[in-house]
Each structure stands twice: as structure tokens, then as C-alpha cells.
Image (cartoon, rainbow, N blue to C red; front, side, top):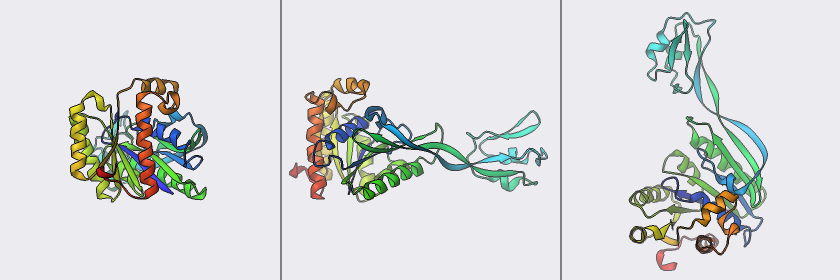
Length: 306
């Protein structure tokens, strides 16, 4: 079983559109019926919008702790308010109450309270889902706004998806990863055989690409690069190719700016299924062929091999 994770240095580069197209293309080739999908972008899970999954299972995800004051024991001394560095405890109508969003879970108030009326409680910070999509089982999650521990939720999504792939003897775990280089990305990259970084030809895109490649390299995962909307700024696309060449990273394709992708998203389809002959779909199909070859060979090609 191989793990392919799709990453981007920032949001909005087209990572999920590429992942959805890969899921469709995988259903047509040697990976047909052998793919498990995971949406590891739990802060903004969008893969399901394109795959139209049928929900099979849902469960609460608990992460982090929040302080809770027992008003029957509290003597209203105000020590908890004075020690809270996050202004999460305030006086309201004579009682001291905790704002669960502002509470950082440090438990300073618990140790300060003279009567032991404050305790830390786990909170529900999101939901985990298992669904059946048209291209295979989909594992995904939704982290509530303002909540932390997204790295732990990504780990849960990856672990469950990987276990399903192993139990069913499936060939590929396809992961739509989160943007950036933080804990969620580290959790998504963990255990991957190959990472495809989708970037765009802008100054910020190049900067974020370098950071993402450094992160992937740090964890010993091979990486390939795909340039989306490459024709909007050819000089920027060329700069990305030169940067990748200097780093020994293969650029496996360029995708042109194509409004068909927007039409496909509105229709809830992968662009390669919605209109397979459009420029973007043709380019993504070429990228997928090169990705498939890299996975089959268990090696990451260099620019000279492409």
C-alpha cells in the first residue's frame, strides 16, 4: 500500500481540485477499486464537496481541556480571574464564569483556587466522519472554528484511513493534505511514500513552496512539484522550475488557468470527469501518469527523468 499526500504552501492553490481529479483518474487505471481517500485538511475540509460522499459514520472528536467552575463550591474570591493570563475568567452577576473559547487549558486557575471548585474537562472540538464516495471510502473530519488540536484530528483521519487500506488490501491511500507547514501538515506527511506539492507562480507561491519542500525533506518523504495556473505568470513558473531543478526536485507538470475547474466545482465533479478534454483536465491527467509511474517504481524521479 502506497501513501500519496497532496500539499500546498498556502490555501487556494488548487490542491483539492487536483486531489479530486486524481481520485477520478485512479478509478480508471491500475488503482481502480483499490483507493482509500482521506481529507486531512480538517480546518477547511472541501474534498467531500466534489466527491458527493454518502455519510456512513460520525463521531465526536475531543481534544484539549477547558476549565469549569462549580458554582456550588466557589466562594467568589476572584483568585481565578486574577491568575488567568488569557482573560478567560470574568465576573458576571456575582459569579465567576469561564469563556471556553478564550480558555487556553493551562489549568493555572485550578492550582490557584483555594476551594478546589475548578476542574479541567475535555471538550468536543470537532467531528470525525467515514463516508462512501463514488471513487472509494472517504475519511474526513471537521474541526470547529477557533479550536486547536487539528494535528491530532489529522492523525486520527490518517490512522483510520490507513487501517482501512491495510484491512482491505488496497493499493493506494490518497490524502488531501492541509496547507502550510504546521502540525497538521506534519501529521499528514507522516508515513507518506510521496508528496505532490501544488504551487502557483507568485512570489508568495515560491516562498511557500520552498518552506513546504523543506518540511517534507526533513521527514524523509520524496516530493514532486506541480505548478497550477502556470500560464498566468510564465516568468514565475520558470522561476519555480529553476528553483526545483537547483534542489533536485522534479516538476511533473504545469496546469493552465482554466475556468472549467470552476464549472466542475459548481457541478460537484472532478474536472477530469466533468470535461476530460479541457486544458486543465488534460494537464492533470499527464501529471497523474507521472505520479503513478513514480509510485509504481517506488522511487522519486529527478528532473532529468521526466
